[in-house]
Length: 110
Picture: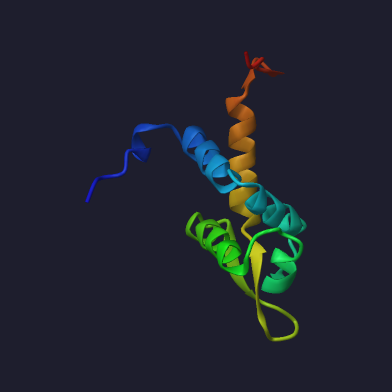
């Protein structure tokens, strides 16, 4: 098995990369945006209106879970759902912002 090359990069680069990987598909962007308030949601609400079949949605949820963005949560109805790992999401968001700034201004992408 190959060793991870992540330790060769600084923490901001690793976190920014994780955010990009997590949000590299519109379905995952939609799921994360639904959870960013901090509330846990049931699976059916999380995938509602996403124009993909249920199996594909579950694959996206699995990837977000492997990346530690999603955490299983017990809802008030005693059923399972998902919650966004806000601490990780904020750390990744801040790292990506730092990566795109120089001297306090946004880098111009050419």
